[in-house]
Amino acid sequence: MRAESPSRTMAWVLLVTAVSAYMLLSASMLLRLGIPYDAPYGPAIAKLHPGTYCLFLAWFTALSSHGNPLRVLGNQFSRQPLLTAYLACMLGVFVWAVFRHGTSGAAFIIESLWTPAIVAFTLDLLDARRQRQIVQMVLVLLACNALLAVGEALTPQRLTPLHVGRSDIVAEEYFRASAFLGHPLHNALITAALLPAVTLLPWSRFWKLVFVGTLMLSLLAFGGRTSVVLAVLLYGAYAAWRVLVSVVRGRVSYLQLTGGSLALMLALTSMIGVVAATGLGSRIFNNLKIDSSASVRMRVWDAFGYLSDIDLWMGVAPAQIDHISLRMGLDPNYEAIENFWIYLFMQFGVIGFVPFLIGLTCLMLVLLRAATPPMRIAVLLYLLVASTANTLASKTVSLMLLVLVILGGVAFRPVTSNRQIWSVR
Image 1 (tube, rainbow, N blue to C red):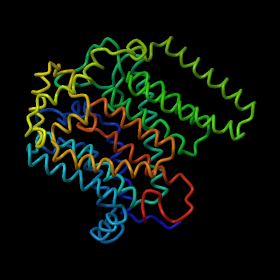
Image 2 (image 1 turned 30 degrees about the vertical axis):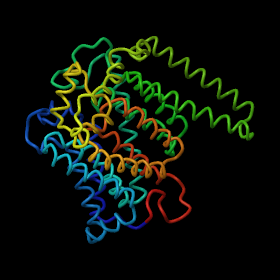
Image 3 (image 1 turned 45 degrees about the horizontal axis):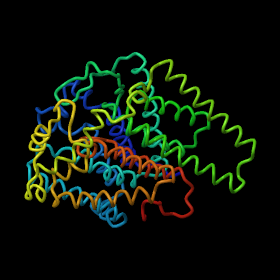
Image 4 (image 1 turned 60 degrees about the horizontal axis):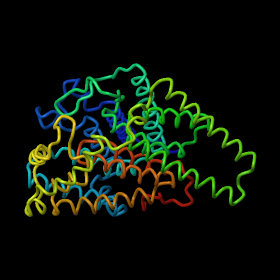
């Protein structure tokens, strides 16, 4: 194996640093450290996550490690037209948002919508060994996050205070863990979306089962009803379909089918026992109904009635959206426009929302092309769950991590040609 150049090693180290920072330093943790990351005050430099600076440095270093950076960059753009189109659309959205509303409130576009392309282009410049390492690191950190969440739920104590708007959540009817990644629903989305990534890894069956069990318990600790319900329905339906196909084709013996059914029943019984003994998931099981939290997601559609014709085309500033939320009767401390499609349409207007939609479609095509069948289900789950919250209209690493795991996970699969599945190198 040819020795790795020092500059490419540095690019790898910077990428590891970026991803680790994203997964270990939540907005609440940064605020506790004195960095006003999502506070309504502080310098502009503090509005980007430390991981974002490391990620951009990793990309620039990786470009330099292959020769002339501009030439390498041009080659990347020509080889990966869909990723290039995605990044170009999100750059256009940023320019439009700044032109229309100013720089205030635009940092989320860099954090949430640029970083998926940046991490993809950086991965493309690293070898398969490094891609496999970064995916395994992400999943190990995710498992640690899940263990911490279960510990928080059993205690119940948080690692850091959970900030929502201008308030700290100090008392809830049902305690929800926040762990390293911050908000419980953000945790639940990432955990549910990356759950099937264990199928990519060359781990033993025992460790895969431990990983899945730990993540499922953490989903109960996070209390994300939508994530849990959709994960059970979508992944369960896919697993049932795979078993049915195997049975019809004669690939499963009677003993395997019986033993598998027994093991599943024991696993479900054990999980029910854990839930009954510890109270994990009590918010989920006691609130599988339309309550005030769920009703907000239906009321947000009324927001269009507060927009003029000019607003529909040009968009309105985030401060105006907050004002509309108040006029709708939403509590500014705990309620918001819980649908990123609606929020972004309101902020960008038709002029900005169309390129956003085109760019997101290009990225989804890249992911679906590169993903295994279980991870394609994960992409669907991600879009469904993210649509029930203000996910891509706020600062989030969820889409970036999904892109990293799916594209980096290609390196675990046997390649029959010299071409990567998601790249035309």
